[in-house]
Length: 265
Image 1 (cartoon, rainbow, N blue to C red):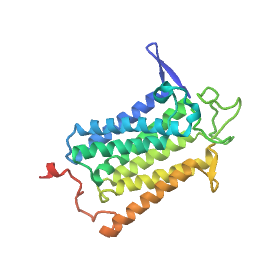
Image 2: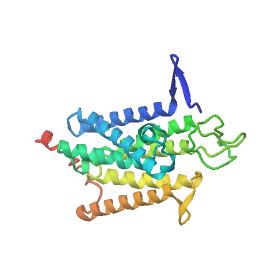
Image 3: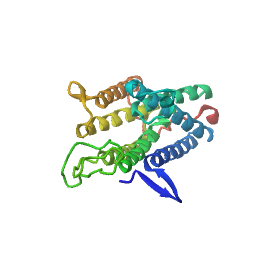
């Protein structure tokens, strides 16, 4: 755990470094997938910029909505600390939709392109949470791989050890990213993002049992309730695809139908 490192005399926050690395990795995956789909390569950078901008705006806006008592002046609206993950997902998705509509490429494949980067970016981002010790760790625990975060930005109590839940999420989301990548040409357009909704929602729902967030309804935390909505949404989406096509998977040997129309022409 190291919230800050010194690079050539310049102090750098490890969380910010991992945040940036996550977007770089996501951009590389988007670029690779768009190249496979014969989409103009420069669109990858436009898409990742739209997601970054929307993610920052959304995560900050939702934090302000949830914590109005901690906003003191205009400066806190744009420059204070505090981000909400699901606000980032919503904001990023909205900005990407607006970008795709502007480009004339708003379809199911557009959403699928974002599935693997979402999982990969989350996996790398949780490395930043682990290094920073920002409070995303779990409940007290003295098991064989329990850890303490006494020097974190949100430190644990002296001598206290907890579940290192950021590590759990990095491993889980890394696995999800790999599974989605291997399925990218084997499922019908739209299914990949639906799978991300289900798998990412399930991952967060389960890990919340080990985290410290307070319960809100039916003994579940707010992130768990949001995860349930993600899972249900993903399952409904896949059910609609299956109802229309008979299966969420493409028949063996059938090429992926989401190639960019102008390139295919």
